[in-house]
Length: 262
Image (cartoon, rainbow, N blue to C red):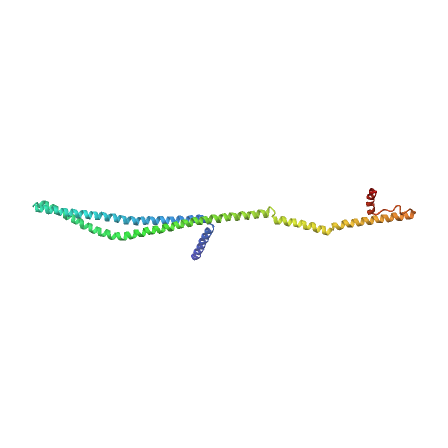
């Protein structure tokens, strides 16, 4: 039971992570990565500063111990010189006092010698750690600068991608608008071609040109039948056919021209 619940919980977590990854803004993720790199560099710099500061503190203590050692050594020599001078002058009390002071300086010298040795022993690893810390900060700084340069390049590419996506979206909306609300040029051309083809087909089927010729033939035939009937009536009535003969259309048309010429 618990095993199934753990599996289901792990599945939900993985699915949620994939959903967040798919819907996450690349610019925000990029800024998060840079912020994380900067935070790591800050922490590394602080740690390196602590290591370097420790080395400097040891160096300062060592320098002070060396100065104190030299001063104590000089004071011990001076005390011994004074003690010897007072002893020669048979001033035993002063000689003993200077001798006691010299012994104090000698003890100080011994303590300083031990301290100097300890500081020198601590100085070697501290110096090595300080050098490594400086190198680590230097290398990480170069890495951070490289990441910042990559960030600028990626932001530029991201802006280009977004502009291209906006252009594609605008073109898609344009095509959708033209396809839905406004006819395209191809649609208008197809409509014109359809109307022209329909008109030509109608003309061919109805035979508009043939019909006009057929009407002319029918009219001529009717006129001929009318003239024949008139000729038959005149023949029955014994009228002169030559007088009432109707000149041909070509002759009638040319007659006025001939009269005008004479």
